[in-house]
Amino acid sequence: MSQFLSHKARRIVPYVPGEQPKAERLIKLNTNENPYPPSPRVREAMAAQVDKLRLYPEIDGETLRAAIARREGVQMDQVFVGNGSDEVLSLCFPAFFDPDCPVRFPEITYTFYKVYAELFDIPFVTTPMQEGLRVDVEGLLSGEGPVILANPNAPTSLALPLEEIERMAARQLDKGKVLVVDEAYIAFGDQPSAVTLIQRYPNLLVTRTMSKDHSLAGLRVGYAIAQRPLIEGLIRVKDSFNSYPLDRLAIAGATAAIEDEAYFALRLQQVKQTRDWFYEALIQRGFVSPRSSANFVFAKHATVPGKLIFDQLRARAILVRRFDKPQIEDYLRITIGTQEQMEEVLRALDEILAQAR
Ligand code: PMP
Image 1 (cartoon, rainbow, N blue to C red):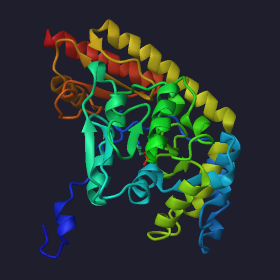
Image 2 (tube, rainbow, N blue to C red):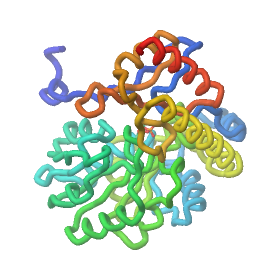
Image 3 (cartoon, rainbow, N blue to C red):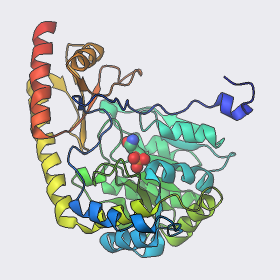
């Protein structure tokens, strides 16, 4: 490590994203990307911007905010857009959390929350998981401070019902603290979004990503929806950091994807159908897994260790994700690919399980 680094740069422990290998012939099911291409309208919309790249983009991505607002039934000034929901989430830490009041989140959740807390010097408390890797809602509410929660949670794929989210928003409001709900995977579940609650809870902020449900992981677009004062808080922090986090191509492409609702519904349906079929196939093969509300399943085999299955899948050019953490080291997080890809995964699993017996 360079002697010229700041104390903080030396101390931080960066997030480790899933591998992005170069090999073409790999079945890549390790970072929850969508197996289908984005709407064909994305290409057209982006191409039309190329000649305008000389000019800076809109400062707050107004065109995209208007499209999101129309679809979600909110006002444009209740929408914030950023360079992936990672950026939106990162801005939440300095915007809503203070160094004298710990933020709470579940022990097993998106590991970036801990990284942001450390980067922005926000103390945090994690709440242990309940039976079946469930989130301990009372534990999260038992502190004095803000709460951040992924719903559906990652990597467990489990969702809390909307009534629980509302109960959390209400209790947090009584305390005068924010509740951030990270809905990266909400489109793949069967329940309404917490966006339906924002008009009633001035302390509730919902983040989303276009990486998974809109097949735009490579474009880096995420957004937040909340009442205007919270959105203004995010804009204050953003404008102290980078005025133009979304470029012209991203604004145009993401807007086109949002507006092509028929294409979105079709692809979503395909992923969910494959997921439900794949889930049953895993259960038949002796896997234990919660019912997923996301575009991945989180599963462990009743007898065969997760590391062995992970390595053996890898040897067959199938990449999934495993977290070397207590409680979940035997689980694999498997992104839902195309039907053909998942059939190939099952063939590989059958071989691996037969050999392991
Ligand atoms: N939240 C959760 C729970 C995630 O799993 C991810 C994807 N790694 C993100 C946020 C970030 O998504 P992106 O930055 O691609 O919008």
